Length: 283
Ligand SMILES: Nc1ncnc2c1ncn2[C@@H]1O[C@H](COP(=O)(O)OP(=O)(O)OP(=O)(O)O)[C@@H](O)[C@H]1O
Ligand SMILES: [Mg+2]
Image (tube, rainbow, N blue to C red; front, side, top):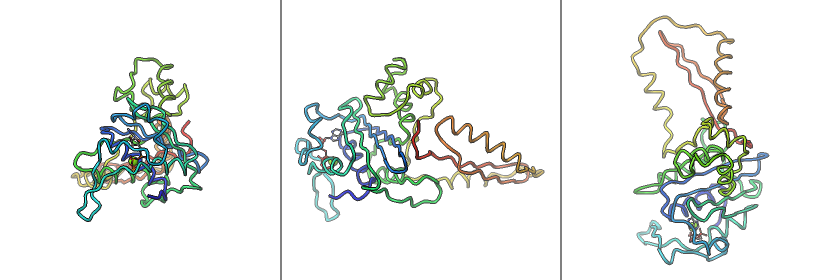
């Protein structure tokens, strides 16, 4: 196996989590200086045996012989995962690769220099960010049959908010303890952000769906029987204010607004704002 892209490494981390029986996988991602991608993959699977913690990045270390994971190679042969090489390859190419937590939940963080291991360029023009990670997660869900785990993708702050929401971390433990949890899981968030998360001011990470059908929404909205009526005229200035309000709301959740489409129909105005997650540091 050769890792050619960051996405290949992410897929291996997802496979490991799935093979550990994870029902939920949380991926926190940041990109700094347009170059360094950090991926923290957290899962609620069976965990890494503590004695393996420092070994799993060594070539040939695998637990698959204890509990082999079958897969088909397309030639009707059933083979087994378990060369024990994926994490070794990841560590070789990454700036850093570490196990932060061995269990409850399991957390592995890797940092890539995308000048050394590049990212695939985005196929879709619908999202202004350059990342293809969401598409990788969506593909993984589509390929994992019959029961794929639930996958969540967001900034470290959003993933921490999701872990609280899912009661993996107890909200009542207090800001100091929650900040400690974040550190122990490899999620870089400031104490100010922890307080914002506890106050409910940070959105949870998005659950990734196999297919992100935004056109379906559009069809549903526009196929409604329009009531008919007058057409509202909106000046540039009005649109500017609407844009500013939406952008303020987005930014308070570490998101941003790429554009605003306005459709004026008889008796109604349809606003469609494109929201995205900025790729640069979230803090
Ligand atoms: N998220 C995880 N939860 C539990 N154990 C894990 C996790 N990630 C890795 N491991 C352990 O680390 C070992 C090494 O992982 P690695 O991906 O390098 O090899 P592998 O999955 O055994 O084989 P392959 O080369 O086919 O990926 C695994 O066999 C497993 O025991
Ligand atoms: Mg593996």
